[in-house]
Length: 497
Ligand code: NDP
Image (cartoon, rainbow, N blue to C red; front, side, top):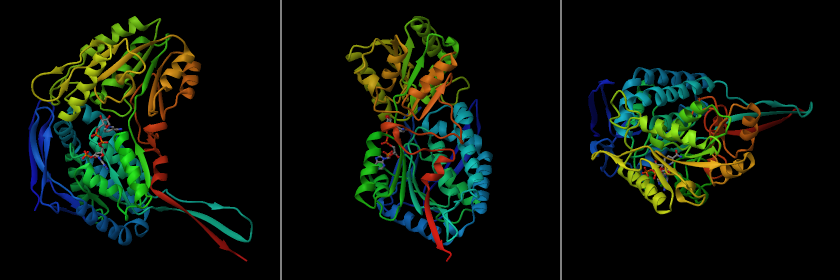
């Protein structure tokens, strides 16, 4: 019998409590893992254990897949009208809204993001995404296609079946919502693995899924390690599609496992090294504020983080001065303090990885212009960091750091900046700062990126597609586009003669 996690907050920004099971959620019930083992969940602000959760195994993935298949064949998929799926998704969104602040507090505790940002950014988009796809559930349909009087041709957009979803730790609830929203709206049954670094909001959601009245087995949540549970999902012969968000390295493994097993459909949302381009006609304050948001939002642990900041030489000095002042003004500290902008990095591993990149920047000869050090003796806090005088082949310029570390690079002309911005294996996002609309449009069209922001950065909407060019991924999440990931198109042809 899995234990119950109970926690009470009495902080300046939130007073309240939570309570939910730490088990695996399989077939509508919370259960222990088949090995009876657990995983420690760590608070990144202190490095101390918050609780233990059940550890899933490949055997548990089999059980979850069996439960999902049963649900798909009997009470979900084509057996459940879209209007009913939409009703259940709406109900889930309502319940999530009722638990809004409790969710934000859990994200702050488990991931280290600040309560205020979790509440204002993560929760709004997570609940908004579930609601958005609730609206789609009864609007997914095919078409009739004119081929002459002797035949009737039409298409159906059918659910794929049982789908696997593997999500990371940087936006634990939001990534869950982006994945389950379109999959449930289109009638698929799910086996989802959260990151074992941040499993808590997924477990609260499992409780609310139960409460909303989804048929048992429609959503199964199997916490566990990537190399066991993640791998078992990727290579499962009875899972027809897998959606993954995380590193490019693991994205390749997921694709390989799919190719070696049943050629399940794969969508990948991977990393980035996104450029922010500040032209000489930019409104400097707008550019500074958004470029700072671009790199420092969520402690730099954002796949679309604007980590390469290119600034025209005419305004470079003025930009750097203001950008430095802005970076210094961002308060790093307790996720539950009223004035914290940035909390700790998510884990000791990530802390060490980011500090390793800072060290490599120094060793490769870049100038450490600001920060670059740990803050405090407890927890995984890193100061906002700026490098200048970089060279294009340095690791800090080429690789995804996933921390509050930006490189500020001087450029001369418009053609060259497009080349520099596109000179990366990634293509997730880009930001352009200019007051010239023609320049904005021309640059946006020339950039190889799935999203281009003009005079803003890191803003996302449930109805606007998101995804990567090049090695930043395959497929699009959010918006109408995500529905395609979860439907199989069947053409039906009837001979009328
Ligand atoms: P991973 O890509 O390892 O983790 C993402 C998810 O994949 C987790 O749930 C993880 O589980 C799982 N996973 C790990 N190995 C496998 C596998 N063999 N098969 C299936 N699933 C697997 O990211 P990390 O946590 O290691 O972070 C490393 C780097 O990845 C970061 O520094 C950052 O650059 C990038 N990253 C990018 C993200 C994005 O949004 N694009 C999100 C997170 C990270 P487990 O936690 O057990 O490893």
